[in-house]
Image (cartoon, rainbow, N blue to C red; front, side):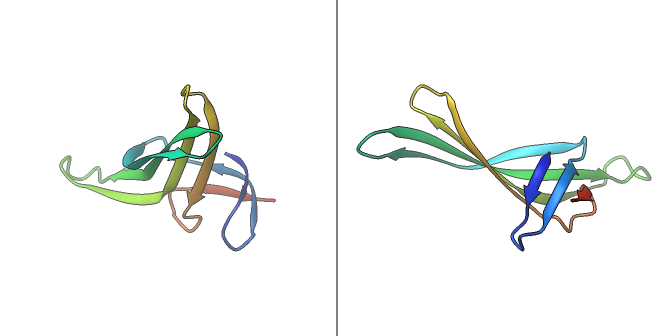
Length: 95
């Protein structure tokens, strides 16, 4: 991901997400205004850190949230990322 501003207005030129990233749908909603209708999907972003000493052991860590917005024709409108920039699973390059 390129060009990310966190909640403390710190700019990151580049953030690399882990390869073992999972997205879990946590909410969906339909919005209606007098001019348009839209669908909003909210996902929880989860990194799965697997402990190689035991195959059944794993630690899932929340990395943040992603909100996607589509219009009534299911055409993409917007995205909003909220990342935990303190997570050890993210590789960050400050700008």
